[in-house]
Image (cartoon, rainbow, N blue to C red; front, top):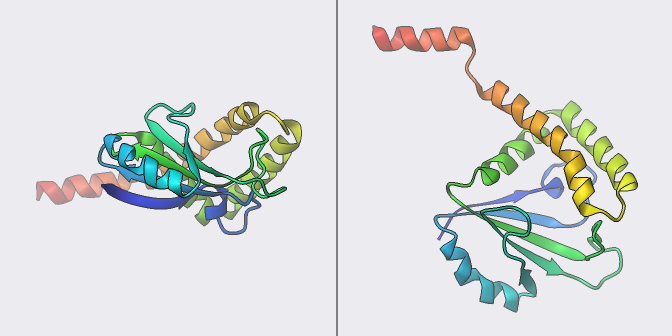
Length: 165
């Protein structure tokens, strides 16, 4: 039922400070498949929160009562988060592109880490404000990644020449 499973989020980026929370992104053929996961994941101490603010996503979190372990800005301790997306949902691809760009660009990784530290101090108890404040940086990285993947005008012209020969 899963087309792909990836480790995403800050813990998936070597060398960056992160809360000890593992984020797992699952690409599903259909969100209906997520329904089959609810009971088994609940048996593993996950709770299903539905879309939880992101349309087209099914979100699970594994809570903990351990002090400081995965303590988030909203005061809920968690160790793991699972984000399930349907194949047509662009959010899955964006998480992978963002992660891969930061893995391969030290300057962007350092800037993101500095921003996260600043925003964590500024929005210590407001997870929505923290996420919103990061959004412009994330969009900028996604734009940079798209430009890096786009063929140059020379490559495009070479491709045209090769197909017309």
